[in-house]
Image: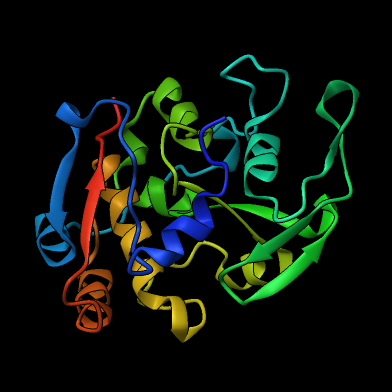
Length: 215
């Protein structure tokens, strides 16, 4: 398990995304501003998108739990009971998007930080099925998948930061995690998204990101 207590630690560290690499020699460390500037700019391509093109909630690490349940177990404020077949009952989670406490796993959505449709728009349209699967179940990153309230996840839907943001108190953290995810997976941004990222980052002048590019 790679994510235990990760959200509290991240919030304490300048409220900015930090991805702990498996090997420090492979990590990239940049300022948030520089990371945004390095993202390629391209028009979005939605053509051909279907959610099923991105196989998700798989047990790729073969531990008996889906990637969704791995995230729920790791991020719980009060641990759920793990039953046969990795069935979860009980537990409490904090949704940082809207500062809501959620009781029981059925009330928690595991959000892809960069939504699957946005991934497709930003380069995923050219990926193999295997790479799409790796993104959709990315447990090698501490920020690609995040447990949040169902309500906030529905509000966000497939929007990027130019049209949706969580509560103001976590803007720096959210932008950092968004940029880490786009950088890690080699995704592009459109012009409106890029402008929004720079606009919000003005409030995070000292933010630095550490991430490991996905293979």
